[in-house]
Length: 458
Image (cartoon, rainbow, N blue to C red; front, side):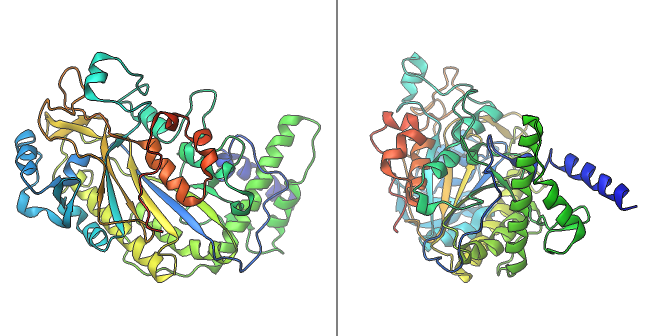
């Protein structure tokens, strides 16, 4: 009986390794398991939480001008435009405009007005500073595969091509000073991992449900027979290098899962009214466990969460579950609860959150009540260290076939004015990336005079 159960358990973890946690390993793993840092020395903790809205959120219906430019917006999108009196106003003027938010994003307006949230407008991947005219003249190099979901996700997350699949956050973590490094620094919550993938380090996997149980193995119990058996199996040696690498990867994943189990057992339920969907559960789980990581002495962590279905070619407006309005409502409530939880746990200034997405949408509305794939878009950054209450960047003219339309066919795709590399570099400098490592992590940044957008007050 024991032998049969043991073999069944071995088959279980062999299968699980293809989808979680072992399946989340990077190009190379840290040998010898994961060592916990010392307790207490926790004064210097910073975490970046990147929420990727899958499909390409329509920034034109997220952040809307309330001044005279509103008329241009309403004229350009007669079927998509939000009523002016429905918008939630943001305090003050910024980037030359008064702004309001899609009413579904109303909880974020309070954070903006409290100077805990800033918008970065017309941001996207660029090789060099580029104008719409240069795109039409083909006089400057452009990012490859524009308007392709998978390619644009990878490129703006730092993909360097087939010979280097790493992302800018993963490379930045590897370039951090040794005093800021710790186990479990690059983490994803699903199969998407380009952003946090390094060249020589692993990517951790973290699910809201935790990883305490591997079949019958209870990773919280050092006396559990199956957990001890798995630990012994992770130490087996082989003459075949492929088997050796599998065992090493499995062992690192096993140690990582034990670490996460320890952290989850110490975690306290966070405050905040989180939505009950997958985004809310992922952010609730992070809000619970990050204070534990800080108490363990961790220094720097980056988390990637991919969520939603924002490829709204049709039925963009309305109350159905896949409409932009409905999904933005979930996003805003989840992010607001996350910020509230971080404030309550003492991490209000230690955690910065970035909302990013595949690409923008066309200003010109599509048939069927939607919008098509674009380029430049509006993202936001949230947290107590953010110099909030402002809109950073150059807001595009909301005029059909206007000066910011880079599409030769006049499909109203904005050429970005802020490079996603400039934004990434700003975030990584806040995390502690040395200036002399910027171009190693962001090679195209050499083409831009501005290497820090001034997003942070602390």
